[in-house]
Length: 372
Image 1: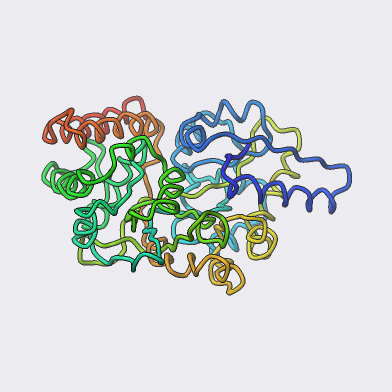
Image 2: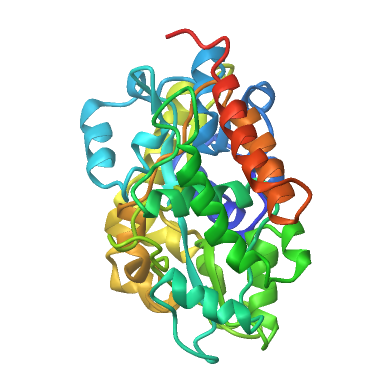
């Protein structure tokens, strides 16, 4: 099971065909789900039906408790695990590690970055610049849950206050208040339809609408930089800084490949996963098959960067300095509730001070029942 965007589906089909050629008698068939399903569907439900899964790292706390995936460090040679750890883009590799085990291998790296229309102007460097562009109604932001909450995460991390360092609150109230103020200064000037848009919908609009110039916070979708993918190409670059430390603190995304604990072919599945995440495959067949690699060797490749306007090189700093979301069992419920709280505050349905308290309370409650 993978997800339905071409970047999530196409490379899996190509890799499976190549793997089948090298392993006579093996057949790998992929199903796909929407981005929303990828972000929210519990992994244990999918692991009941599929041998191989493309997963989102915030699920790993629940995964470790439920025992629905196999620990890949127990199936693969230590040398292979070391190589993949060394070849990670930022925290992509460790994002799938919890409770002393590796539950998935990164095949796709992404974090919130900046997208802009190079035919309409240049990227911006600071959040102050974003606010000025927003006044001209030229900014788009994907704010459909969970992405509104993720914008809060990124802006907080960028000013030196990563969310979730304490279990009793998401952030100090004054920090959350400042971040809300900065985000609202932009969201007040965007199309209200943005609150129903995920990054795919927002990138589609940005590529088509000549009144829009930038998406200051959106996950990297390299396909929009490919020639002919949409009416106009998008360029990706580092996030515009709110703080003084450059493009740090962006909320990490990406995908990893995992193996169900119910599979009848654990060694074969682990072999496929390690190959799919490895430097040779990622730099070659994976990238050539519409994939967005998660391996740093691929990210440095001229051949991989050339078709996408150097999207990997131009966002590398943001990815290397990205912040890792909480992954405890209970986080996913908070992420869903927290994004709704954020949107209510940004659209005037809830006072910001009340939203700040609600976010902190919801985050603290997400740890109830977690054994430490």
